[in-house]
Image 1 (cartoon, helix red, strand yellow):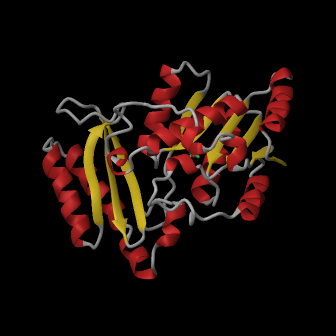
Image 2 (image 1 turned 90 degrees about the horizontal axis):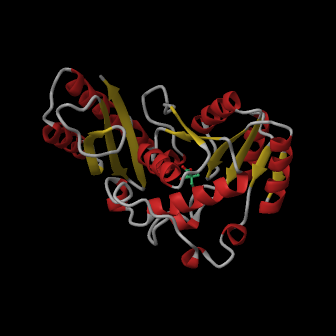
Length: 282
Ligand code: PAF
């Protein structure tokens, strides 16, 4: 595996592959890789002849009081995991390579509506930062296919919309969430949990499962399902931001005739803000 920090080096290598007719699969990450990322990487290998991963903690997607400075950075371990997973090229740029005029003054991509609900309401500017960096990474890597985890369901939906509306020639694949044996979705932010919080954290998955159970049993009282989820999480010691039933394709509020539901939640537990979701297709 080759590790490069320069945009020009990525372009040169990918252009060789494309010229020889090879298909390029891409997994963008912020590093601190875990089994959830490995599943994205394994999926990427099924879709391409060559596999590129990026490791970039993107300042533009962090709010002023968020954990950008403290976000876990483990580049040497990440490099080893990517090599073991059969990655061909790891792109690990500095902030100045990605934002030569500074992240604050950089050109931005806005996906309106979708970016302002759910997590977007609690993290203003977050999805603008995600859409911008992903569009830039696509312009640098020029992948044929890119893989994103379904755990960040709203992020995946924002990226699909951006790709559609900007006519970007890249296929977007969603990869299923990887969970610990007790149901907790794998996340780099799980490491912020104390031992006691880690014991409580799977409650998120239990409440999502209960909500999906109510929907599949025929309940269409979405407000009551959401309220019950928020109450249960609050009682267990979380500070829930939201717990909502939405339309799976566009995150609009669910309707009685919805056939693809997604139940999404974000809740704070100690220093960690955990997000998770479950889908139900009828
Ligand atoms: O999901 C992530 O790790 C990040 O939001 C992404 C897609 C790599 C963009 O920085």
